Length: 229
Image (cartoon, one colour):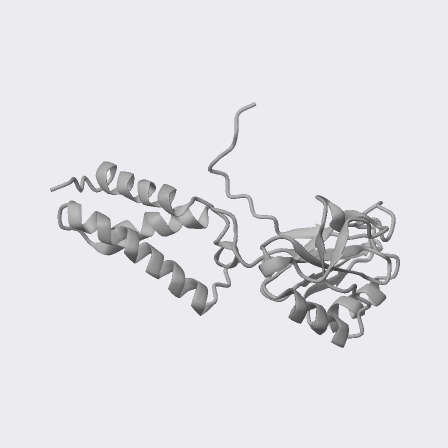
């Protein structure tokens, strides 16, 4: 099967099954999630959409929207930069949330009996290993996961969401300038923005910094015919 590499595929919404639409709407709204839509139709169909703060992906629930059993959605990830602060904020909204734990064995975060979990965040807050769990009124299960340093190619989470914060954008522009500096010393005169554009585009699509630099180099040579001095 041919692999699709250039399609623009963005995960927009995840459907979760609930038994009481208004109760679920109130629960997620009380968490500070943005209400995007609540549409009801004459045929009984109703769709409610909410979006967690700074998230590119939303949740949907309603009537006649899924045949899945209420509460059957499990292991829904919410990525946070500070697991303890995020856990405390949820608790302040009256949510019954677990204590922070880290995985002593792979997959411990998915074990309903809590086996393999070790109390507290991972040593040195190692990325991807600290968790807390909570459920909505129907029992749909959520995981808070602390990510402090992303794996290569995944640093563009916020920018892919179209909600780049100033600090993230500044760091990315600084990174771009550093890679462009080397290119500028070895190639003919050119506009810096012509190199920045393909570099930033490649990073947005998930390329590593090195891959993005190579992509920008190819663009300059093949499209703009900028060659080494």
